[in-house]
Image (cartoon, rainbow, N blue to C red):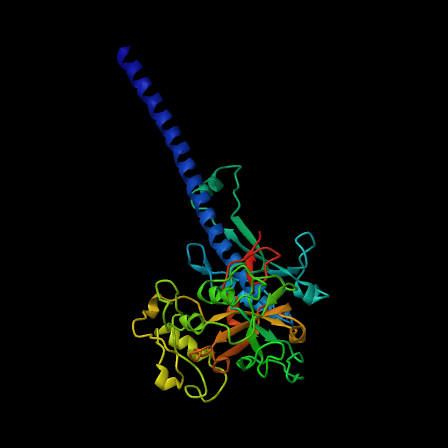
Length: 408
């Protein structure tokens, strides 16, 4: 009797172990399948994020073409892969990229949008269906059970906000038709155009298309020096005033420090240079325009200032000890456009908008304004300007270049 009882107990334990193993395998299988779906969703989310950020970037500029925006989003989204990086994501025209003027309004495919210029938000959706379950599918072989293949979908919404940390240099650029002594009409700045600084002092200022302007609204030359050697990133809003003390008051050394050229009391430890000090003027760049692409290549190799003899100016400074690899973004910056007619009766002018400019050459010793030039790269809100790559998203009151930001 005792032996039979032991055999009976042993059989019961075997049944319990078998049932426990079945439950354990089912739990493990469910965890693996859910983990797989979580990974797939993360991969799809990467694709949706990339799509939305790329698509909304093309909603800047004067002319908005939703087909270009959609194509940019689809291209970026399709560069991603899904299902453990084994399958390319597939986004479709008039399906996965939709547009809206508000987060509270419906998102529409481009073919249903009546006013493209009003579109400020882009939604991208990505999905993968018919994902076979690995372990849970064994339940399909049990009578009365049917477990369908899984589907996963994600979405991302992006908009464009002004950047909050793009920095500016303390100059004013005259709007078309508002230059003084004499006024110039029909001036429409083109990308790559060189702009010369003004030659005189207020109120006539003299020829040239830009002069000095303290961004804090004062008429202080010391403010201009500080804004040149520092980083003035809290940009005044459009409509506020910048102040001008004139042209030749600006300290030569402050301007030249951005080129890695130092004269007492300026030094690299206190006044960071740009990645390159290579100068562009009629001597070093006879074309007289479109120096930006060469500037980018010079930055990549930390090319220093060529020296006064090669450039044909006298800086009264030294760049021999400058380590340009320790530089920063110091010569590509924002500058305000103003109605220069306002300067005929005072030392202040209201900001109309912001431009992206490249500082081209160092200043001659003694603050010789005619030796200084800027290259115009476009309005700060133009999607094609290089300044648009700078800065992080700010709020609606920021005034930097428009940059993409995810909102959902």
